[in-house]
Length: 247
Image (cartoon, rainbow, N blue to C red):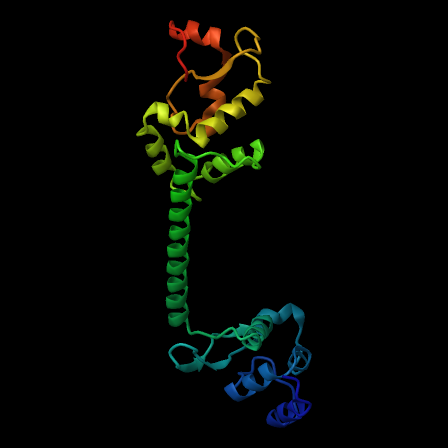
């Protein structure tokens, strides 16, 4: 509100004087300060020695938005007073300490519940779309975007339930696992990082991605450097001692 008569009303209510240092602010005066502009409200406070600001404090008489109890705030320095006025002007309600604590706890619970739902949905989406042997990437999705999709969300156990994803992979039939968009993306990433070259004989023909260890099975996207290697089919056969075995 920017009523030209407000300043006159405020000055009249204050008996034509400034709000003195250490003076309490009544609810009526507070309402007027909130209703006028910031510049007008700020101009009504008597300025003291800036070095002694911590000793110049005001109590604000105000009504709690939630419980309706009226009371005074603890002594506040002028900047804290102005902050309260600014928040009330913006429609941010004042709450007593007890109600504010309860409000904060309720808001925290709401955020945690929302976060859990999002995490649940993201985990289900990950499993259904990246760990299903019947799923395929859309042709227009680039390799780097595929890698980002399977790796970014699981680098920290914040966006999805990582342990659940790992358990899902470990419980899969291995031949089904090799058909998933997840494994195909990891394998393609390893081939690319190896410059499509066998890491044992430098061949560039008939390349496969081999597990050196299954220690981190289910986390291949996190441990591909340690656990996976690009090799040709001939070297792969030598490792297993048999031929024509895919992995």
